[in-house]
Structures are given as structure tokens and as C-alpha cells.
Image 1 (tube, each protein chain N blue to C red):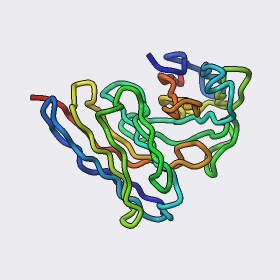
Image 2 (tube, rainbow over the protein chains, first blue to last red):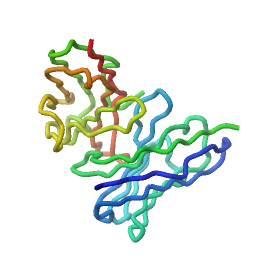
Image 3 (tube, rainbow over the protein chains, first blue to last red):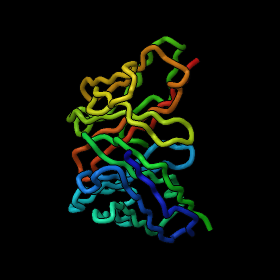
Image 4 (cartoon, rainbow over the protein chains, first blue to last red):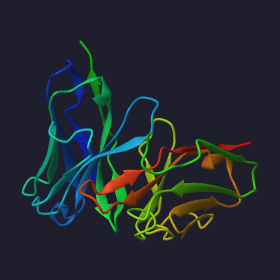
Length: 117
Length: 111
């Protein structure tokens, strides 16, 4: 069974940093591109970042470019999102998703990031 | 403001059909057959319903169908059921360095 489990969310002060993790199991992690998608409270889904299967290429939404870094450790079946200079606009549930045929085939349950002083 | 335009709401009675549109540009929806649709119930993670414009993943009822014409993709839900009441989002591949664009979501109400 494919499972994606996000962790690392929590309360952070404005301007602070946080690193999210997404542990994968039930499939060969190293052959799939992975993305992060977020959803602010009461709002729609928003693309955040993407990484190729080998980690060689990364992509970011304009809203997070220069502040967030996506990475992966294929030996540990784990996806990461390093987030910095966090602001109220970054407060959201963050989902990791496995990509197949250009679609988000599987999603994690999400981890909540709260930005507040 | 989302890159793809969806109507904020749609509705239909049980048994009826409803179609949700998703309008982009030639750089995303119109240029590629990589539009996908997601269903999201409150408090839950999204679920893939349609990929590559019109393909259904295993387990998704055939009441759900997708299509595309020009820069607009559509999701049709036929034979509406109470459990179809949810938010629906379209997503498209985009040929820029960002890679994906999302619609703002449509809240489907089953009357």
C-alpha cells in the first residue's frame, strides 16, 4: 500500500524557518517525481514545489522561490521542504504528492504550518 | 488569483449531470493533454479523479468524465449522488519553470 506521511509542521514565528519531511513507503520512491502542494485555511490548493525522481531538477512557485528548498533522500525514501522567511501567507496545510502521468496520484494526509508570534 | 479559472460554485439535483469548467491558456491547458481533476471533501486530502484530460484512475466511478476544447477543460459528473458534494480542483502542466498551475476550485453542491 502506497503511503505518504508528512511531518515537521507546527508553530513558527514570522521570519522563522521550518523543515517538512514526507516519508514514503509501499512503492519505489526513487523513480517518481514528487511535489509539495499547500492549502491555506479555507482556501484552495496551491502548487509549491517539485523535484525530479533523481533530485537533479527542482521547481518552485513564484510565491516561494528563493525562500523554500525542495530536496529528497532516495536512500531513505524521504522528501523534504526547507522553508525560510516564513510569513502569514505561508500558513497552510502542506501536502506531499506522488506524481504519475503528470497527475497527483497519491497524497499524504498533510501537515499544518502555523505562522504566528 | 489562480492561474486556471474555475467557477466558484456549481450545483445539481441527485441523478442530474453537472459540468465544471477550467480555463487556462495555450501554455498550459490548451497546449498539453495533462489536465487532472481532484475531489476534496472537508478535512480530507484531495483525491485524483481524472488525469490526462479524460482518463479515470482505477476505482473512480465512470460517472466522472473529463474533456478539453481549446484552452478549456471540463469535468462532468453524471448521475449526481450525495457523496459527490465536495470541492473540485483542476490542475495543468505548464511549460514554464513553475511546472504546474491550479484552478481556484469549485464547490459542488448536491441539492
